[in-house]
Every structure is written in C-alpha cells, then in structure tokens.
Amino acid sequence: MNFGKAALAVVAMLAGVAQAAADEASVHGFSGPYAGVSATALKGFLSAGSARVDFGEGALGGGFIGYNHRAGDFVLGAEAAVQTGRASVFGETVSITYVADLRARLGRVYGDTFVYVAGGASALHTSGAIRGARVPLANLGAGVEVPLSEEMFLGADYTLRVTRSRVFNTRVTAGYHNAQARIGYRF
Image (tube, rainbow, N blue to C red; front, side, top):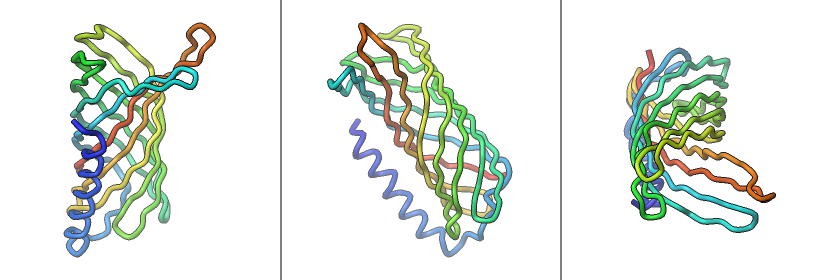
C-alpha cells in the first residue's frame, strides 16, 4: 500500500464528488448528530533524537458518531470513532484490534463545504507480531466534508496520532499518519 497514492486518491475523489453534488445539494445546517463509516490508509514512524524511521503501512476501517453545533459560519463539535485493521511493521503483520478516538472539532462552513481542525485523545490496542500493546496517543488533524444530499455527506480527514516517552535520556516519538475517506449521515 502506498500512503501518498491513497491520500491523493481521497482528495481526487472528493473533488469529483463535490463538483457533482454542488448543483443538487441544498445547504445543510451542519448542526446536530451524525454518524458514518470510514476507510483509512496509515503510515507509521519512530523518531529518537535526530533519527527517524518509517516503520510500517496499513489500512483501517471503522465508524464514527458525533454532534456539531453551528453558530453563524462556525461549527463546534465532538466526535468518537473506532477503527480496526492491519499494518505491516518492520515486515511483520500486526493486527490492530482497535483504535478509539475522542476529539473536538472546530471549523467553518464555506457555502456547502465544511472545513475543520480536530484534536483529542486516542487509544490503540494491537495483537499479532506486537501482542497486546496498549498505547495512549494524542491526535491532531484537519478535514473537509461536502454534502451528497440533504442528509448524506462525504469527507476526507488527515489525522496524526503520536505518543512520546524518554528512553535513556532520549526523547522518543512514535505515531502514524492517517488519510481517511468518510461517508456519513446527518440526523
């Protein structure tokens, strides 16, 4: 799996769908509850001091649920998500039992398009080659959503999840980049 190609495919898909949907979709309030499913390409990294290593790629699938409150052109929201999947880490297959996210979203509506930044906490649990690892992570990201209809929307999201620790007086950072395609329903 090539992370760059997956991210480019998500952006291209959104551009095409947004253009096709722009004439048909009416402006939704971007306020209230929503839920949906997601597909994610990920790329892991590890850095210690000035050294950096990319250590794996993978794919996740899952779902999300949230609530947005709109005030004028601005939107404030909260979202919970759970995903599962597999990754290749240094040549070994790792089962990602779950990645659970809880994050806040702050964004702005431009016509029929919602653009946002998000941040919060994540928990990761693995099995397989790395058995039973439970890792707390911070997450920070940005995304865009466009309507497909009054209730349905299509989105793209980039999220960085990281954890930091000290090993022998050296700061170690591990995490992964995520490019995500989302489709959801506003209630």
